[in-house]
Length: 246
Image (tube, rainbow, N blue to C red):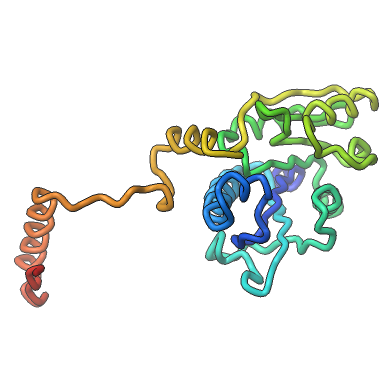
């Protein structure tokens, strides 16, 4: 537990409500679909972070009356850091400060919009971070999907504007100005439109229910279902017989 307590993964979480979703997603998909896409991406990022055994998880959550807790994300309700500063950059810094206040020596923030993030990359990031080095993961569009720091390196956030435009490049330049080494994790992509969404869908073995097209039942499939029902009834005669479909 000691080693795990030294590391923290930070994930910023917003409720599955259209007016709380990233504007770029809403522009690309429309408000309702954007909320579904965002929720699926958040769920994937949360599971990855939760299952990473070498770090505690800090969730920064902007709760609402409709979603006052995180049971929509995890039935066990993992708890969260309540957002006080809703501006993204302030919120990010508050989460890092909490991580260090609670005892973490290294903290890595991940962006759920980059679904190809892998467990190995998290391990690489934590290994690279020190008081003299930061970890940084860039998306193909120049934004960042991961940044790892120690408390001493929080100064890379001192000047506002670090999250705009080609933010990965901007943060790398800031780190170098502070004489910090920058270790890059593999480049990936962020889901920001139909093309990147399709890329993510095609990479998944099992698609979220949102993306499944309805399938018509085949006669062969119906026959198999009926046989299974007859088998169950034979094994347990107490079960009522199935009523044929009309």
